[in-house]
Length: 127
Image (cartoon, rainbow, N blue to C red):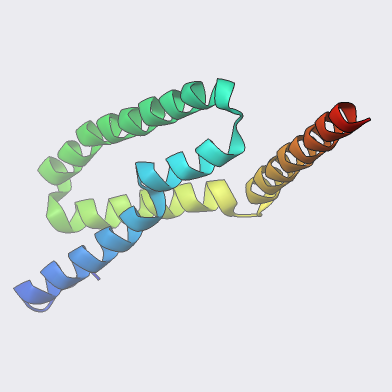
């Protein structure tokens, strides 16, 4: 939609909606919230640090590619190429759903371990 605007305001509208929607699902605050609940307190700061470093590096690594695309194929070609990169990344991450199932299984295992530890601690203190 950003690559085929008929008027300038349509470009601004589609850019705002698409970028806003994309950022709302993958910003640091969303990822940090998930990681904060998934890791125990003693490991949480390391997980959050690795996540922030990886996200920042990803943004840094895309800049040369984006600049090269803008210089060689123009904004239209750059938008289409970056859309293709995003689609390929999405397909690689969740094409068959295996990564999502693995992540859910890990979260469920962590929750089960925490519940077991709480029950064990309660049983040890009361009996």
